[in-house]
Image (tube, rainbow, N blue to C red; front, side, top):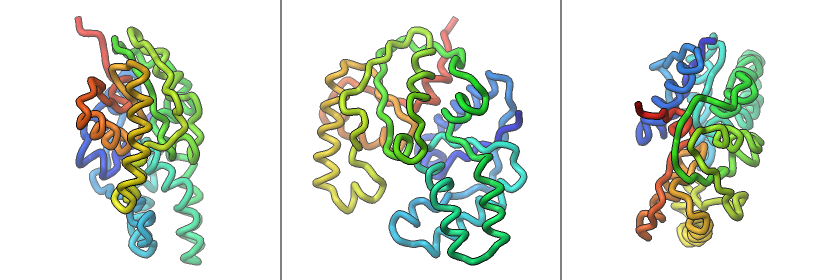
Length: 244
């Protein structure tokens, strides 16, 4: 299968290793991956902060770039949630039937990384080796909008050498929420404190998630407290291999 990678601007700028990991996993499974250099932001940041008009041309750009893609994969639950939940609404607001049709035709081809592996490719064992104790934080978009359920955990449990430890209060937000953490810093910090306490209580070496935005927020707090816990995007764990 030919898979188009939508890396997202956030990952492309701050966490490029995640995109490389996605490519490594998919190619190891026998698929070809392309990166369309014309891609830009999905518009989530603009929409979330009230700039609906500014989000529209970014949506149109996405539709143009990926119009003929067979399958589109993104290692970001929040960006996939933006596309799946808001593109139809934005298109409807324009009153343009052609734009509505383009969105309708595109949506079935857009997958979050773990959705693609489990639901479309039928894979839970990616051939990974990761000899560490790992807990998993389900981001709000992955859990509440995309409904990923146990897909990420099923993938983790198939990784050789990995010991999975359930995270207490896993369904609680870490407090990032994009600009929420900037506009409501005190509330965000309190939510982060609860999440850090839960992560530390697991005794895990690594906290994984499907969204680097949450992981950046969690790691920032853990690092300031000098907690001996690393963070890793799920794709990077699934890309790991035993060194010979």
